[in-house]
Amino acid sequence: MTMVRNYMISKAIAVLALLGSVPVVAETHDSVSMGAQYADQVFYQFGSGERGRSSNANWHIAFSTTGTSGTILTNGAAGVKLQCVPGKTVGDWATIDTAGSGAWPIVYNDAKDWSEGAFSRTRDENDPFDLGWGSYSMITHTVVGKRVFVITLPDGTVRKIRVDGLVSGVFTVTHAGLDGTDEQTITINRKDYATKNLIYRSLSEHETIDREPARTDWDITFTRYVEPIPYGQIMMDYPVTGILTAPGVAAIRLTGEAALNPVLPVEPAWDSSAMIIGSTWKSYTGGVYVVRDSIAWIVRRASGNIVVFKPTRFSGGGTGTTSFTTEAITTSVTEHDNGRTSLALMPSMVDHGSSVRIVTDLPSAAACSIVDATGREVVNLSIEAGLTSTVLSTSTLANGMYRAVVRSPFGITTQAFIVR
View 1 (tube, one colour):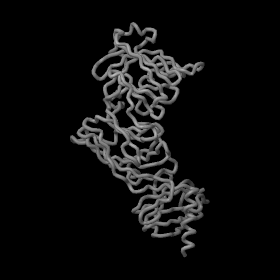
View 2 (view 1 turned 90 degrees about the vertical axis):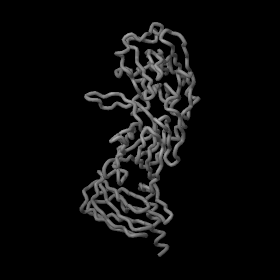
View 3 (view 1 turned 180 degrees about the horizontal axis):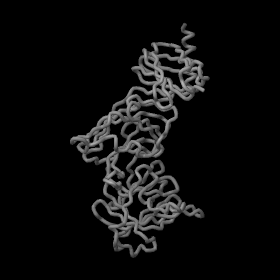
View 4 (view 1 turned 90 degrees about the horizontal axis):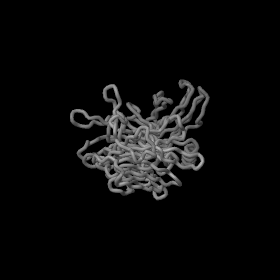
């Protein structure tokens, strides 16, 4: 009997290795505090916790370390305002003033896309070489500055600023008082921050700031950013407190029953928007913040690992604390202190009307749901503890892709199969 048991477990594990499984292990509770009035930006890595923090107000502009677009962001949530001077180029630098600036649009970063900084959002969409602040040269493979901006700092200081260029990975930026006094030239070498996503600069302190962990060391950041929100019949740019995903991270938003019992869809529709988690998971009602109890995200890290993230509480500006749970999703047999949970389906593709054998090895009895591609349960089974084999007839199932979802006190394990 032991030999048969070991053989069947080995067989199940071998099938798992070929098909892949998606178990959700026990959830972990954690919290992050940004400090009073959301003073800090906090960088967080699933499985490791907080990896770094820095003041939300200690920088004015930030430079991308990768890509040819030469993205430059502004700290709009801290009060930095950027305006492109209409009809002017770098050749007009000496005569720039703010006459008529009340009618100039204020441009902010696109919070959905780390590569869409404020300095890029003035580009001509019909010109593929227009990068906003400058133009890309196909001959030299450099970006040459062409537009002039006016930047207002949080303390009310107004300066003119231009990006002279991006050559061999080095940004050159010039800014000065409107009358040309106190002219400063900045050089930012991307190679000096090759492991980071952004390089930050304070224009008032004249310093470059290393304020974020290496790009491989964080998945989400709790921060302040500017987001368009409805205001009557228009959309208004407004600073909010929320959660942004790191470049390379994608997620799926779950609501309702799907959020209460998260299962990775058969065909995940990953959303790489940095604002996929965002700020709308909480609302201010009756003088307190309320977190929706039927919302969660399945997050795919840049490493490929997958977790379920669910906010559970938000304190507001007193401590700026967000409480949440995480559940790691792996692609292997789930190990527990009380034993192994394994699931295999044989075969993984069957003709309509044929049977699928569900082989499980569970430390305790569990429920098994068969769900279709939309997440709807179509069959419910009870599975006994130990090594068992259950036969599922597909005669009542339409052709398509399904998942067997086994739920036990130790977590959730799922496996896909196809009826053809």
